[in-house]
Length: 443
Image (cartoon, rainbow, N blue to C red):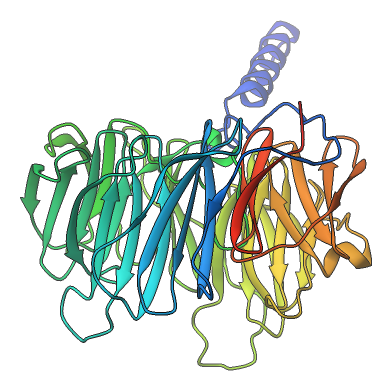
């Protein structure tokens, strides 16, 4: 027989169980931090008074980038010569005479501008195993430090502050090169499926455009991660190239993204994740759901990128797709899109690039998956300035967009050339005729 006193004790136990369950920590909370930046106080653009950097006539392609108070520009000329120049972003004057790199190249894989080095990669297209040449230039003096052959399609490349890590998948060798001398700091052998660094929310707060990728060019942290041929994920110390003692089995193959203490893997139709904590295993988060045009199209999950405290990806193909926002395995929102090519996170907003460069049809989705652009803006060119502010280029003008208020500021007449302007905190670099010049858009 259950007495009144016994019922009271049972009620207390049930209540305690409910309370404990209700307050138990979520084993898979959303990302701990979201990219944040202070909004930029945009104003009408004003050209700096310096001489700028002159480029050769009829250059095939140009690009520019801003790193602190230095702006860097690069190009491939009509005869296959590669050039690099630099500007003082505060004055618009050249920092050093433009440099022509040795060799002639049929193609060019662009420039990577970093605080401690400027990298340019030329491509010969001669069928050799090391078809590209990687050049490292001193950003302060413009002097060529060193160069070496590589295969950009067969190498994973990580740019840390002190070393450049090249993981040669065909050669089964991972090597860190000193930025100053080009000499190996360390090397180790082994089969390589993928090599990557741990990214953080701060890597999503700087300027970015359609083809620059969502993350900062420089890798940070004191570790790197590599998946070997057996599918084991191992953590290595960047300073020594030695394993840290942490490894995880069952990584398999696919595309990997390490972000804020988790590693995500997409395999075309499936998304998994591993929290890098003791005892955790790979967990399946999402399976492709959108029907595609061809039954043979296995590459249905693409462009995984952080979006605020969520993770976003594209499910589908060019004809029909959804952008899906996930809180771990829970779908928070999904938005139907088409002709989607790339995603770019801007704070808790997400740029969806679509339609191609000749007929752009872009979206800017808010934290609920709703597009906030006008019809004219969708046909333009959106760029991230920081995690709270954007550029919108359309109808021959550049506009500043405050994501907190959605207020637009007309910055003035403008023309996007090459891969778009090099963007800094208060100024940008753009090509006008045969010169790269500096414009200030904020005080």
